[in-house]
Image (cartoon, rainbow, N blue to C red; front, side, top):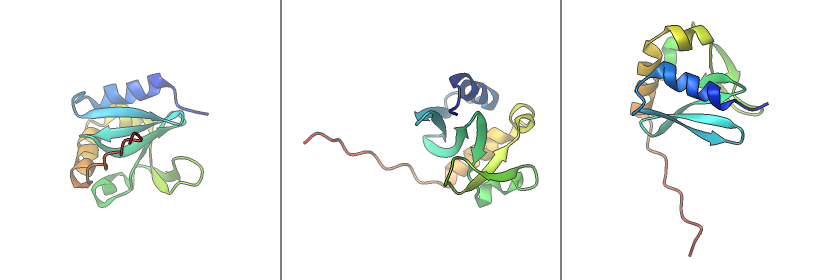
Length: 110
């Protein structure tokens, strides 16, 4: 199905902190980055957050579902949490704080 660019822009807008959050397009979907680290996916116009100790607050507020066929489960964040909970950005930044930086891709040129 794919995610619309305006959905990714809407989620970024709701999170605020434009200097700390970004998205990258991946196969018609998006990866959501906090401080340069992938913390969630936006797939089929829905937000999926990594299940970690730092995201445990979402356990009672979100169902768990795969972000795409064959993926592990993530927290499926309902729209009211995206639009009405200002602590979501803080939670995503907390997740980023414990993740390693992504490895730099090697150049294909020799």
